[in-house]
Amino acid sequence: MRFVVILKQIPDDSIKEEYQDVDQLNDSDKNVIKEALDLRERYGGTVDVIGFGPLSAEDVMKETLTYGIDDAFLISDPQFADMDVSQVAKIVAAVIKKLGPYDLVLCGRQAIDGDSAHMASMTSCALEIPLIAYSDEITEMKDGSVFATCMGDQMAYKVEAKTPAMILSIREKNKNRFPSVPDIMKTYDGTYKTKILTNEELNLSVTKRKVTQLRKYEVKSSKQQKLVMSNGKDEEEKAAQILQLLKQKSVI
Image (cartoon, rainbow, N blue to C red; front, side, top):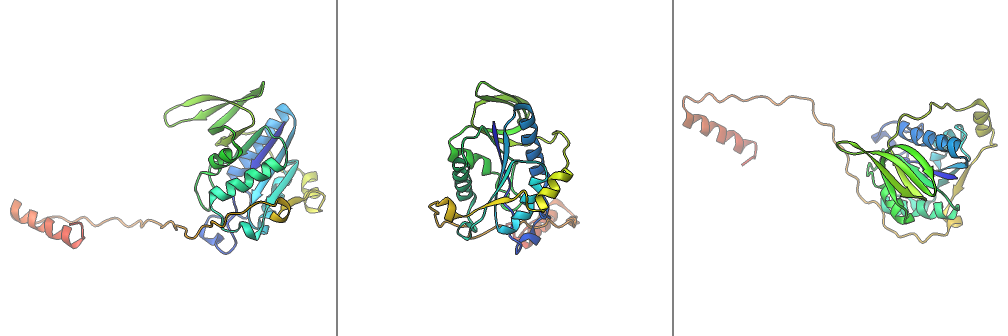
């Protein structure tokens, strides 16, 4: 079997300070990689990792190689800069198809930069394969189907889908794994390498639709609102004071 893991898009260095630290592989991505490696141990096959971002993201891809995956691919080209999530999904889907047959594509819940949480759904749409969302556990794979337990708002439920399929994984209870010394040495001496994929090689038709505006999250003030007590002598005077206050606050 062939398992493909999609890593989240890495923010460019110029805007990275606006987000949490992403110098290392984040925990969500590690969990998905561990889950794919667990599946490889159970069913055999290979685990490939695909990342999308600037060349600086190669450092993060190197970390994935230290876990013993089979191949790491980084989609990086100036033509792909500032693409919205729908375009990124189409490009990633085209690369997955180009790399050959696969059984499962796995990715985490959402990216730290755009925070759109649409990558899995849009990629599965582009690949024209079923999506299993919020999978907490892949219980079994047999007879061309994958079975999973998914988390809903009120309860867990069981899902079956034909393979190939997309898994949006929220699983955190994976086998504890650490980078091995041999894999670390082979990664950093150049034996294991991330394969850089540019559009010169992919030859994709790129639509020039780009992100033009990002909404920046504002930190809410921790200051408590000051309570205002009405001290009118009767109900009519109290009502007049409240009315005046609402006008001052531009409520009415």
